[in-house]
Length: 92
Image 1 (tube, rainbow, N blue to C red):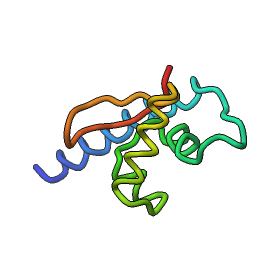
Image 2 (image 1 turned 60 degrees about the horizontal axis):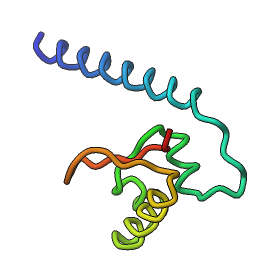
Image 3 (image 1 turned 180 degrees about the horizontal axis):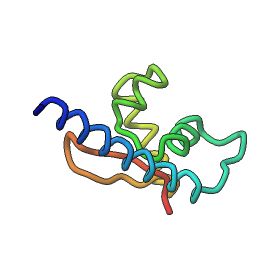
């Protein structure tokens, strides 16, 4: 019985998160075709971690952080969270 409750709670949590990401996607303007691939990826998923960027684009840790920092400096991305929970999303 406890396992069923855990699975149900996880499913509800996932559904709420998916709904929130869908609302965020609809609120975002379409990016031009020549936009940075990282920006297009983040626009699709809503927000992501540096690890997700590294894995998606097969980048080294240094390269991923350098490219993310450049997008933050240009005002296209915003960073939130601390240390191990850092996330990136499109700037408002």
